[in-house]
Each structure stands twice: as structure tokens, then as C-alpha cells.
Image (cartoon, rainbow, N blue to C red; front, top):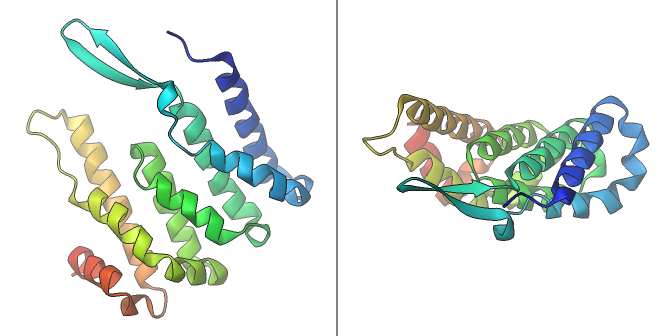
Amino acid sequence: QTPPPELHVRRAALLALTHVAHNKPSLIVDLLPEILPILYVETKINTDLQRKVEFGPFRHSVDDGLSTRKAAFECMYTLLESCTLCIDLRQFLVHVIGGLSDVYDIKMLCHLMLIRLAESATGSAVLLEMLDAIVDPIRTTIASTMKETAVKQDIDRNEEQIRSAVRAVQAISQIPHSEKHPRFAQLRNNCLG
């Protein structure tokens, strides 16, 4: 079973949007209220695009929507860099929080977005409002362990995503009054000592 052909078109559109947002953001600023809801739809896991493939005695999960979803998060990262003032950061952060529970590549992008938001004045205010929603997915990432049979590459990727999550916690902990959120303060103390 092959992925639907429109999936490639959606991915190409997201890559084009990312390119424009990076190189000529002024072309899309006025269109963001129409573009962002469409972009946010692409960040969600579509179970219709997931399938099981058998390799001899083994079953392997394949997510045909992963490359499109990854392109959507890359586009969000670029928009955060180039069009921050034109984005509803609360709505944006809802989708970043959703990505914190996704696969490795998307988690890493979401950690970078959290760091970027923590470093901006408007982003840090929104982060403080939604801090409790961030704690559980980050705690899950930090507490993740690998099976004893895991290969070195998987172990290295897991360690890198844990380091990335800790960097995000470190950046958020620099926001004034972040320590007033008890769940985040506990996470910070567990991560940073």
C-alpha cells in the first residue's frame, strides 16, 4: 500500500511555505490567518496514514504522514523565527505541546521552539500561561529508557532527545516567575538539581 499522492503535494506546499517564510516573510504575513489553521492540521498524527508492514516474523509500523508532519513543524519553526509578531502564540504553543509527544525528530524541533519562545518576551509570557501542559510530555521524554536489546543508534538518539528536553527546561527556568509553577519547579529540580 502506497501513501496517497496528495501527501506529496501537501509536503511540497509546506516546504514552499517554509522557503518563503525564511526568505521573504513579507509575502505571507497578511495570509497567516488563513495559512496557520491549515498548517496546524498537518501537525496532527493521522492514524489513517499509519500501517503495519511484515518483514518475515517481524511487524514494523510505517507512518506515511511523518514526512509531511515533520515539514509542518519545520515550517512552524521558521515562522516562529521570521513572523513571531504575526502569530497567535497561544494557538501556536498548543500544537508545539502536541509535538512534544511525537517521534524523535518532531520532539527535537518542538524543544527548539520552546527554547526560542522562552527567549522572547511575548513567547515567555505565553509559555508561563501554559506551563503545566508542557510538564508531562517533557517529563515523559526525560524519563524514557531504552530496552537492553536496543542498538547503539537508538540509545544515542534517546540520550540526545533527553539532553534536548533538559535544555528546554533550562531555557524555560530562566523565565522570571517560572519557579512559581509547582509542577514545573519540581521538573526543573529533578532535571537541573
